[in-house]
Amino acid sequence: MRFKSWELMEEARHALRRKKRDLAIDSLLRAIRINPEFLEAHLFLGSIYSSKQGYNEALKFLLRAKQIDPECRELYY
Image: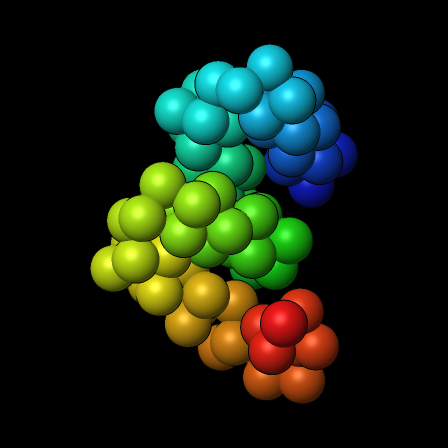
């Protein structure tokens, strides 16, 4: 299952390179449904939503990332 989560993360990265943010978001949400503790997917979603000025959604995913790993350095950049 976790391998599938990483596949979906790569799918999201590929979609983002093609400027398809909504497809990237969909892939990441699917990855989180498979593995709710997938820190990197939460961080990535926070970043994408922030870039779309979806700050409430971004905050939701970034706060969840902080719950998963309170020491996560990426949250402070």
